[in-house]
Structures are given as C-alpha cells and as structure tokens.
Length: 126
Image 1 (cartoon, one colour):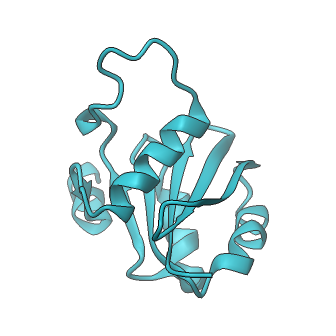
Image 2 (cartoon, rainbow, N blue to C red):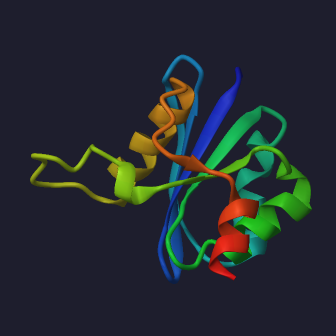
Image 3 (cartoon, helix red, strand yellow):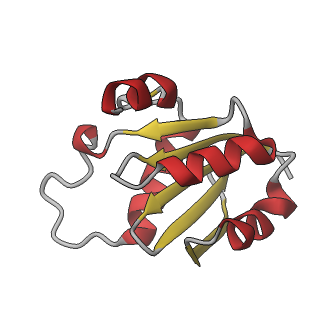
C-alpha cells in the first residue's frame, strides 16, 4: 500500500471517512460514530501510511483533532474550510461519501482550498 490521504466529513454524531491512495484509488470509505475509540480502531490499519488527514472544519471539530493529534497523527491533521469548497456549484446531489472523497482528492492532489491551521483557528474562536 502506498501513501494515503484521509478526509472526514464531520457531523454532530458521526463522520464519513474517506481514504485514498496517492494514485487516487479509494481504499476505505465508511460512516463512523463520533466515538474516538471507534475512529482510532478504524484508522489503525492505515495509520503508518496516512500522510494527511483533512477534517471538515464544522463547529464540532475540536475533540476529533485533539484526539487524533494525541494518538499519533500529530502534524498530519489539517482543517478544510467548507465555505471555500467549489464542488457544490451546479451539483444537484451530494452526500457525505462524495464530500469526504472530494476533500481527500484535493489533499491528494495538493489543491489546498483554504486548509486552515487548527491552532490559529482555535485561538481565534476561543
């Protein structure tokens, strides 16, 4: 398995997790409840190969980013600004799966659409 990129379409009680290889091949896609233990368990098989994780910066991202950083994903976690995402222009149907893989594709291709540094955002919001 090659370098991996993970994206999370985060909601209040769950998130959709999409992981792609550097080649663009989808290797994982699943809705996971917002329970850190379940999330870490699901990501464990991919942990060493994940280069970046982009979390959609909705109102409830703090606990997830903190949990990922504290459990071996430090310097890999970034926030994706949903307001800067152009995917939705003209699309009639989107869902959590397509949103997660859209974000994963952007980080894989290094097309960073307002990837935010969580420390700066946290300072601003607090």
